Length: 146
Image (cartoon, rainbow, N blue to C red; front, side):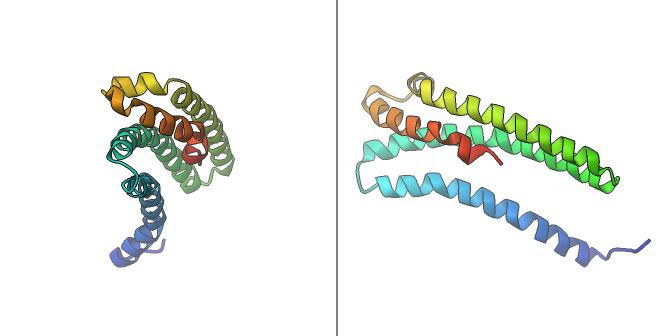
């Protein structure tokens, strides 16, 4: 069996982890770019979007957990040379992400005022936050699915 050096292993892990960090950075930047653009419009819209972005990042974490579990299972099955199980795990993960993504999008779109009320958003910010959350919520499915 071939022995892998410590430096070689670190390099391989860095090559695997880099795309994950880049993806996470880009998704986090979406909310930041919205805030930067709205900062020229009004402070009210920035405050409302900041609250909505907290909710969106929370839903993003749910999908990250699903995807992390999928990655772990796929790695184990690939290591064990069980390719059929890899296909099954990926298929189940896609179905789960589809169902959860549609549910989250529907939930964010229809219950936006209720959710923002739970977050303590004041009435002066509710209209701006609700409108933004309807837009982001309707398309959260595309943003959160693999």
